[in-house]
Length: 447
Length: 183
Image (tube, rainbow over all chains, first blue to last red; front, side, top):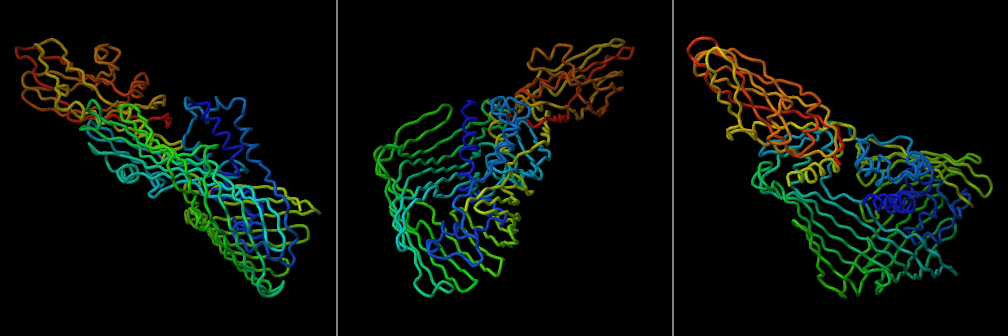
């Protein structure tokens, strides 16, 4: 069982690291990281605001990179620390090893080591006290209990990994790749009280976790328009819109409820706890019938001298209809059962609506900006700026992340002709820790 | 089945909250398992001028089970009453721990020796159990069950009245310190 587990982990780290990061709203561009996550350049604004295809470059802006390549120093460090030739025997992944720590493993998944962690978020180290008696069990996690999530927690979002197309006079025709993934877990009230509030375990009581996961992907032929409807190059009103015909290639959804029920006695009886789980899976495999749906993006941008203001909304009404879906149910209670519920039925999924409100102000060689971004899993706020000094660019920014914590970014870059090298640092608390870690991102841009 | 508590409660606790390099401390209320079973009481009758011992039946204690985790140390603290009925002399209590009931009869299973107390007449003498177990017993606490047995050792003063009474456990808690590798 361990080899597939490790293989999946490696796949996430190597192939999916950037994708997972992107899906969770993380930037893979060191410039953006140096701005505290603020998407200041118009290239990144286009992702969420269809009008930005028509907005001209800002005064003093030195062109948009044709390609930005993240330099994965974190992966180099990771595979130095965990040689791939011994990965299955690595204490970090080997459950038989005394060095195995599930918290560290989960942290690695939540923070794929694409970039270098210059300061690791410390793992909570307080003692956990368990009181055990014939009819009692109580867990006191101490300070660590604060990390037990009260609300649903998870990762996910929608991304557009590819978006090639051809533009003629503001009209653009292209094909967009799209991926939507969501994983969410929610502790049941009884389990939450047991773990977070140190409530003693009760007899004949069920303790459970609810889980839900969705993964769907496809492509979308798209017709878009972006143009200026009023003003000129220095002061203008721009609008943009895109109509997508979503074609779903594959989709899977799992909804589950797992837990255990205590018996008449916590420890004294013959069957003190009975684990159980039930899950409903819906899926349409790759190669099966395509899913279909229609959705739209809308964007508006106002440029008035040095000030830019934009509002963009993506995936409006993007409901995918899957005409040939199979539904299975699985149940575990003493032993496992699985049975088909329905086949060849129609189901629907909905892409999360994402929106971006952005503001930028350029004066001389200084650009300041702010944005509010929601990709379907909470709102983030970014404020930052950059100062160009010759071939050097200095950047800084702050953000309020999805957990409503303040994060900080800073960095800089060098530009030599068609080549730019950027470095960015940012703090993050998306680990299982209440303290911040610091990531250093590096990327190479070709202009 | 009892080991499922590990996967259920501890698994959720550790994975959801994480304890990093911290320790897990199990406070096992042993008394809750032996109370009222007869194993919490040792009756003794020692003829005058001689020594003797008597034991209670072994009792099973259920633990969550900690797999291949490392048990660092085990400390015991408890109280008992020496309820002497007749005669005078000394009484001590030994606590035996083993992985199964027959194992508690082995001399090597003696985990705790409570220092002897002098008793006489019809009196109740409170006593305290306080001990750090040797590392030889650590592995017992990684499993899902262990067995405990109490043995009273008496020495009656010379005379005509036998030393007779009961040693009754009134509380016993084992504190087990465990490294955090639950899986």
